[in-house]
Length: 212
Image (cartoon, rainbow, N blue to C red):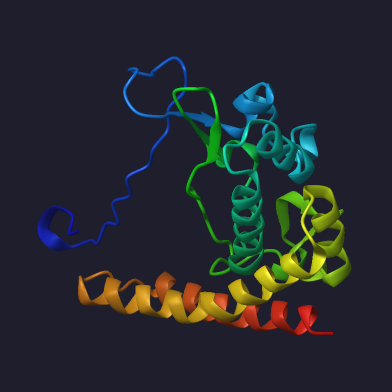
């Protein structure tokens, strides 16, 4: 959309955030990962004592309505954040939809912010909010780390590696389609092209490490 005087372009995002304090009793309740695990929201970062991948997976297995499906979705989400440089994917950004009988389902991924188009620290050294098999630096995550991640969340390693390769292969093309659609609607900021190039380059590097 355009701002006042059509001098600026704006991207409006509908974000869903809710917890017990705002629940109106209609539809499923949304609860953040830290809320489901029972951790104070200020401790949302693993590096500050908050939950990690193992904790999110345990919450899925304990409370999930479809734990197998949600664990695979969680693996895809972690792979996606790795591919796009989404370094702020902390436990509060993984939420659960709570049904009438108290059973939970992993909510759609949201609040993803890529660091790839921005200057500063060398991208390979930028750190994910939650470690993948003991490693958080984007450019240092290898097959062995994803195998450890698979063991932590209770999925077969070959399935997790397949998910990673699929996400790394598909994301650049899908993002290119989104960029084309955005441009057709008037959103054409230089950061969009930098993000597109950054994702393509980083996805290729991730694929190389997965195939070694």
